[in-house]
Length: 168
Image (cartoon, rainbow, N blue to C red; front, top):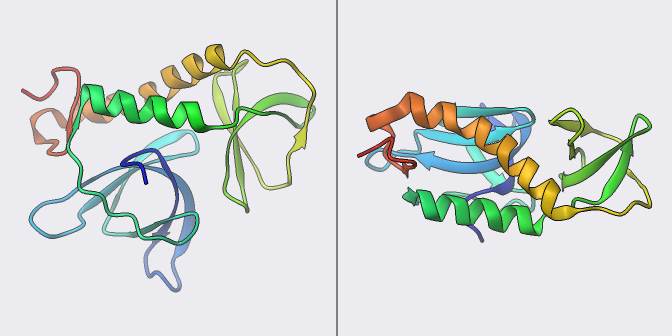
């Protein structure tokens, strides 16, 4: 299992009764032996969640304890981008590119508007030539726009991520 960019189910509140969010797990920040924070990509946002339960889409618990450097984080991101389908599909008669199918929800990238669209109906495939390398580059830029505000905000207080010289 990769250390980051894992399609996941986040249980907010009680695992049995809590609300379930479809997310991409990015990293955890923990102190001592507690699961203090999970950082996830949720639709168009990058969010921290405090003390919640998280599994991958198959129900396997996620709790990696991983210290990122700039190189390892970029490697995880590139690995994720190389394994997503980017299949052309239609969304309200507009062509977008499939990122993740959570079974009850799908996420697709719309390069025209530079955003993630979320649908709940089964996507319809479209016959279209795709320049996946260009799409991956655009999507990488969008993801980094989500992540960098947290990195800059945290500065020296971010224990598990050491990116771009923010933490010395």
